[in-house]
Length: 458
Image 1 (cartoon, one colour):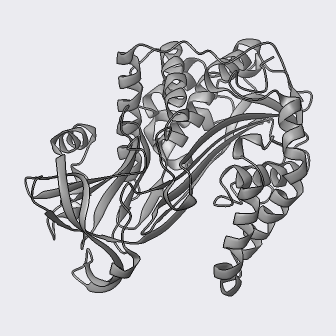
Image 2 (cartoon, rainbow, N blue to C red; image 1 turned 30 degrees about the horizontal axis):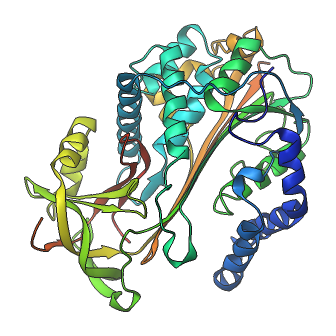
């Protein structure tokens, strides 16, 4: 059985003890946050207060997941993967992200390639035969499974130390928090190698719950809401987990200020040109002297704006007006890499729309289209590496993500959930983002794409 905490984290008992005083406040805040989604008149004034109380109460890493903890001697592996393996895992994540983005065309869209890749990789640890090959195909994976898991481990370890040099301007500290967690039905047999891989490579503990009623889903949703500071309060829909045997969850939370904030006084309505040729005025931020990196490649405007600490950045890719649809159809990982490689240090006169985007979607059609079809079919799915038999199949695959971009910086959160059931430049460069664009929030040192999306109507 795996240890329930990471080597670098607190022990389970200490984790529970440190969170006890704030658990009730956090749970109440997340419940109210979910309720306020249907109360828009109250949301603007009430939700920030609730989240401020909740997030100020305790560190996200101190919040234990629900259920009975199963603790073992297995510990997180700290040895790093070879640089080439890490580069391949990051590149596969980018390729997967662009393929998923292409399957949701035409409208605004936000998701986390990294969150989906992490959660699916945990599934991979228990998959065999065609189910395993389908997962590696879906993830655009080029490494053998063991090397892939170690590379994912190394990438997450790298993310954990990001923001060390951030200055936390305005009193808002840099935060980049990744969580992997396995939940299982009480009494469900699980294979030791599967549990060891999750504990050693993904830092995932095991929690036992009773999925015979909807109460387990409610408690998991509350915990996901806490880990994402209220941004993802309801990952799983009502009764989605009733009868589940295994549940795998990844959460990702990001919050950082810009290295150089946009003056609030400069924000005003500016025209944005839509895909259909329409022009609408949208709230647009403006900074006439912001440091970053920029390039124009074959008419495509690329801008990279750093966050506090310079470890992470937002990459914006805006093709010439009237060409967005054609450009995106041919946009792949190699073209993304080529564009990012061309940006150079520049002072920008930057106009950028303020953004608040949210997506909530079923991953099943996407993963089936990418080659994971067997995983969803009772009798064909082979997760024998999890349970020692082939009785499990993938019944739930969901993802939610949100991003908020304003004058001070960016806040973004994502969660991915799976559930199995038993078969039955020197001069200022003017950068005006006044037309549809793609964006990629990335880790600068590894190139790992944390969030990606499309904006066609801010």
